[in-house]
Image 1 (tube, rainbow, N blue to C red):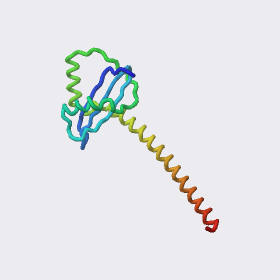
Image 2 (tube, rainbow, N blue to C red):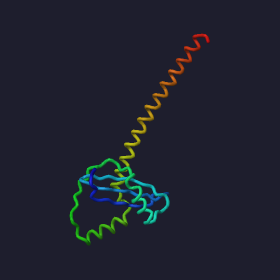
Image 3 (cartoon, rainbow, N blue to C red):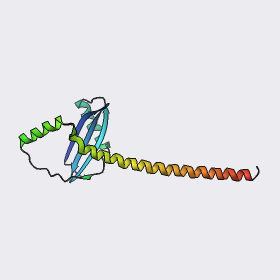
Image 4 (tube, one colour):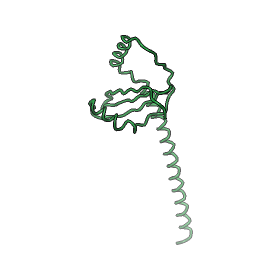
Length: 139
């Protein structure tokens, strides 16, 4: 079990739903998880969601995070926060990680669908062969 050093939640409107991106950093790794809220959640609803369902969230596999945390001048930090709140592209790193997780899941889905299709095709072929044999027997 790893200890999480820092976490962040960003809630934004992604038409037509409100979406939350959970990010967490621990010991050199970065993980993200996307949650769709639907209607605009209040602060109390977000807090309730965190308390009840945070342990059930499925974060993507850890990505190496080479950013080191150093002390920042408070005024510079405040300017950076203002830039982040005004700029919609602040969550691009989390979205990239979530997109990568989605691509991996898509490949797994395609592989299992291909295997399932192959098994069904083999079963249909065997059924046709059995039917052919049954017709030849004259019954």
